[in-house]
Length: 210
Image (cartoon, rainbow, N blue to C red; front, side, top):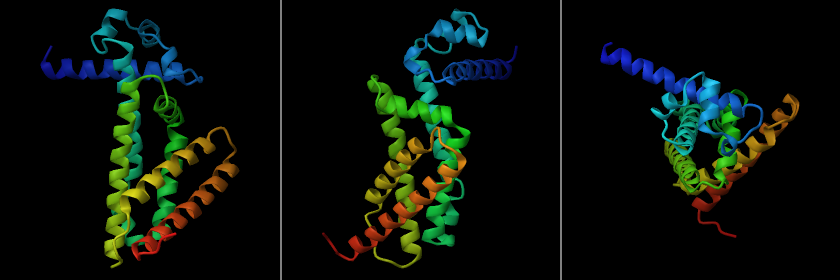
């Protein structure tokens, strides 16, 4: 067996394990309720085979969190460059739209992030915090680019981005287990809230304070 084929099979087995864990959690179970042997059975593998990929449940949990965070960041980065061209209002609408589509397509992974962001594992919390900070950094850079393209004074982009990410996570929580019509209403509300946030940043840039 060539090294390339061996690596491919190893990658496929790893994904099979992750898919099995996600399937077990699809019914509402939390990551903390799973065990490696149960995941191995769901994946149709011997426990010893699973240990070759993940030495313990925490390692498997970190891999699941990494993939969920990666998918979120990819979803939020689609069309980033076009935000400069379409204007701030349309950019906010696109931002909320991308986040809403992520929730629809990856509800289980979003629930995982919500659970473990406040969960018992310090390593899980730290990993999610680090990934969300990357998301904040990327959004802050987008805000700076939009403001610079418009020739406006610099705004507190990092603070705006932090508030926007917090707002969207709250939006995601509210979007779970509601009707499509309610989701649209929530998304429209989020667009208005982010617009208010952006306007506040402009006034702050002009030196206005409460």
